[in-house]
Length: 400
Ligand SMILES: *Cc1c(COP(=O)(O)O)cnc(C)c1O
Image (cartoon, rainbow, N blue to C red):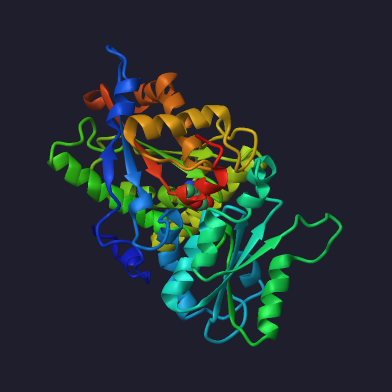
């Protein structure tokens, strides 16, 4: 896989395996969704970001963190924004990574494991108020102890579980923690939720776009990928937003530098997993993150990336963040029992539900018919990105 020069020059600290995370067909799911004379024929695949790294409980955050580490090891001087968007919040050699998430956050354990890898201390702030999962859990005590909470502790992180803060309270627990660490002579480095606000947070998935393109080429040569020879649709979770944003930027750069315009551009569909904020909030963020990454890798952010590139679907969020609705649960079970693939209850179960809906209801077919060139109109390839998260399952022990 080769990256364009400007992109290739951005420093990256490898956390992933040298080989790309595998892509495999979802045979049983494809068969179950294919009706005889359906056009176009849809073939489904999964890219296993849950098998991307030897570090604990692999998931999509490692890919993002690869591009943050050079800045952790050799930090740019702190600015007032560092305590919001991320970065070192005091001058000197970083001693402590600080991050936050919901109680069963996957992001925080990936940060904890990176801290381990770098020989740094990790402080994890878990917000009881963020997780609908906690409110819905029958065994709240277990929800606060098992799954990712246990893993974070095993990884040596200092876990601080915070009560929901009353509206009138003016203090910010993150700022308080950063200040406290500073007062004790530590040099904290702040990594915001999902690393998405961080200026370098979108680069990992911009690089993933090039990895996917290289895998497409290989699979086409081997005769394993028909149709356009591409994953025409990519279904991925949209939580904090830089996974989708990074992919948009990366594929944009690929399209821009590719010689042939014989195929319609790949379409990235971000499936929202939380109804807390309106879709427009996420669209604005994803556009911002895509442009931020785009600017770094050689695109003209404003001109090359627009809202037309952002496609988010908010129909599959269920009732709350971190709560598995009965429909999504059906797909968690189905993927386990038909494919032998374990999804997670917070993100990927909702994505597979969305993917199945797009295929079953003919939405994908209609979209493709509008955009496809006649050569490839009969067959379409869709890729589901499995972003990990299974380590939260013990906290959802009632789900079977
Ligand atoms: C964090 C996470 C996501 C969402 O990724 P964002 O970049 O925050 O949108 C999806 N799936 C899993 C399993 C995650 O942990």
